[in-house]
Amino acid sequence: MKIQLRFFASVREKLGASEELIDLPDAVKTVGDVRALLIARGGIWAEVLAEGRALRMAYNLQMTNADTAIVDGAEVAFFPPVTGG
Image (tube, rainbow, N blue to C red; front, side):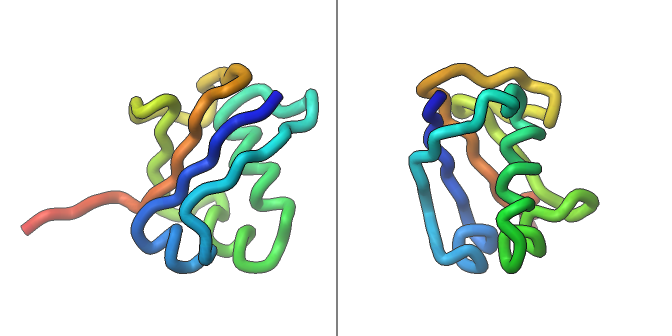
Protein backbone atom coordinates (compact mmCIF):
# COMPACT_ATOMS: atom_id res chain seq x y z
CA MET A 1 0.00 0.00 0.00
CA LYS A 2 1.30 3.45 -0.91
CA ILE A 3 0.33 6.65 0.87
CA GLN A 4 1.33 10.29 0.66
CA LEU A 5 2.91 11.80 3.78
CA ARG A 6 2.84 15.54 4.37
CA PHE A 7 4.67 17.51 7.05
CA PHE A 8 3.84 21.08 8.05
CA ALA A 9 5.30 24.01 10.02
CA SER A 10 7.98 23.10 12.60
CA VAL A 11 7.63 19.38 11.81
CA ARG A 12 8.54 20.10 8.17
CA GLU A 13 11.41 22.37 9.21
CA LYS A 14 12.95 19.86 11.61
CA LEU A 15 12.59 16.88 9.25
CA GLY A 16 13.77 18.86 6.23
CA ALA A 17 10.92 17.44 4.14
CA SER A 18 7.44 18.62 3.24
CA GLU A 19 6.16 15.39 1.69
CA GLU A 20 7.04 11.81 0.88
CA LEU A 21 5.41 8.96 -1.01
CA ILE A 22 5.90 5.81 1.03
CA ASP A 23 5.23 2.13 0.38
CA LEU A 24 3.96 0.70 3.66
CA PRO A 25 4.64 -2.77 5.07
CA ASP A 26 1.52 -4.97 5.35
CA ALA A 27 1.50 -4.63 9.15
CA VAL A 28 0.84 -0.86 8.97
CA LYS A 29 -2.94 -0.43 9.17
CA THR A 30 -3.60 2.84 11.06
CA VAL A 31 -2.38 6.42 11.30
CA GLY A 32 -0.71 5.46 14.59
CA ASP A 33 1.10 2.62 12.85
CA VAL A 34 2.41 5.12 10.27
CA ARG A 35 3.70 7.34 13.06
CA ALA A 36 5.39 4.35 14.75
CA LEU A 37 6.99 3.33 11.44
CA LEU A 38 8.44 6.81 11.00
CA ILE A 39 9.66 6.92 14.62
CA ALA A 40 11.46 3.62 14.00
CA ARG A 41 13.65 5.42 11.46
CA GLY A 42 15.42 6.85 14.51
CA GLY A 43 17.34 10.11 14.78
CA ILE A 44 15.40 13.28 14.08
CA TRP A 45 12.33 11.23 13.03
CA ALA A 46 12.12 9.65 16.48
CA GLU A 47 12.62 13.00 18.16
CA VAL A 48 10.08 15.02 16.14
CA LEU A 49 7.33 12.37 16.00
CA ALA A 50 7.86 10.83 19.46
CA GLU A 51 4.84 9.62 21.39
CA GLY A 52 3.97 12.15 24.06
CA ARG A 53 4.94 15.14 21.92
CA ALA A 54 2.22 17.61 21.03
CA LEU A 55 1.47 16.59 17.46
CA ARG A 56 -1.67 16.78 15.32
CA MET A 57 -2.49 14.28 12.61
CA ALA A 58 -4.81 14.43 9.62
CA TYR A 59 -6.09 11.70 7.32
CA ASN A 60 -7.30 12.75 3.87
CA LEU A 61 -7.58 16.39 5.03
CA GLN A 62 -9.59 15.53 8.18
CA MET A 63 -8.24 15.80 11.72
CA THR A 64 -7.87 12.30 13.12
CA ASN A 65 -6.45 10.13 15.86
CA ALA A 66 -4.01 7.23 15.89
CA ASP A 67 -6.74 4.57 15.54
CA THR A 68 -7.92 5.70 12.11
CA ALA A 69 -7.56 2.95 9.51
CA ILE A 70 -5.72 3.85 6.31
CA VAL A 71 -6.22 2.73 2.70
CA ASP A 72 -4.06 2.72 -0.41
CA GLY A 73 -3.61 6.19 -1.90
CA ALA A 74 -4.45 8.03 1.31
CA GLU A 75 -2.77 11.15 2.63
CA VAL A 76 -1.48 11.33 6.21
CA ALA A 77 -0.24 14.66 7.55
CA PHE A 78 1.64 15.60 10.72
CA PHE A 79 1.86 19.11 12.19
CA PRO A 80 2.21 20.88 15.52
CA PRO A 81 -0.81 22.23 17.39
CA VAL A 82 -1.77 25.68 16.17
CA THR A 83 -2.20 28.61 18.51
CA GLY A 84 -3.50 32.03 17.75
CA GLY A 85 -3.40 35.34 19.41
